[in-house]
Length: 170
Image 1 (spheres, helix red, strand yellow):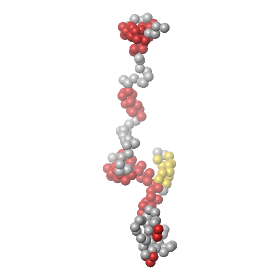
Image 2 (cartoon, rainbow, N blue to C red):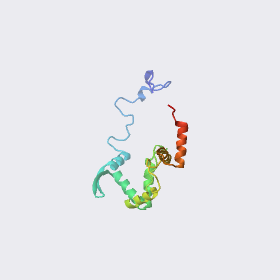
Image 3 (cartoon, rainbow, N blue to C red):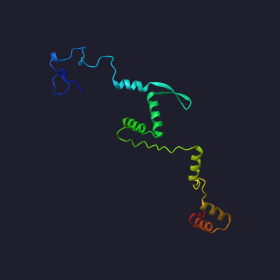
Image 4 (cartoon, helix red, strand yellow):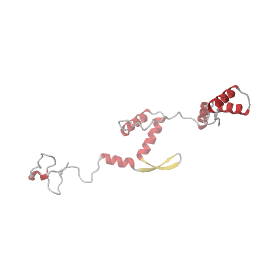
C-alpha cells in the first residue's frame, strides 16, 4: 500500500486525528510483550537444535537433540512399540506438507535379513534373466553361418532375403 497525500494509507481513508496518533519514539502497544522475553516456540526450537555428543554403533557423533529423539523413536517403533510408532506418525504429520509433492516416492524398508541371505534371494530371482548385451542374436548368427557356406534353413532364408532386398548391382 502506498500512502496518499496527507498520510492516508488507502484511497478514501483519512489519517487519524493528531491527538490519537502515536508519538514518535513511543510504542503503539506499550503493554505488549516485555523486551527480552522469549516465546515458547523459540525456547523449544533452541532446546531441540542444541547439539550433543552421543555414541552410535561405537562411534561418537554430534547430533541435535531432535535428531536423537527421532532416531530413538524410530528404533523403538521398529522394535514393535506402538506408542513410539504413534509418536513418529504425529511428528511426520507436523512436518509433512499438507499437499503431497509428486517429485518424491515412498521408501519401503525390507524385512531384516543378513547380507548373505539377501544376495542368495536376489541371485534366485535373477538366475533366469539374461544380462543386457549378452543375449545372442540368432538371426545374425544364422546369417553369418550361411554366408560362410554352412547350410541352415533359417540362414538360407535370411541370405535369400538379403540378396533380394539389399543387393546393390554396382
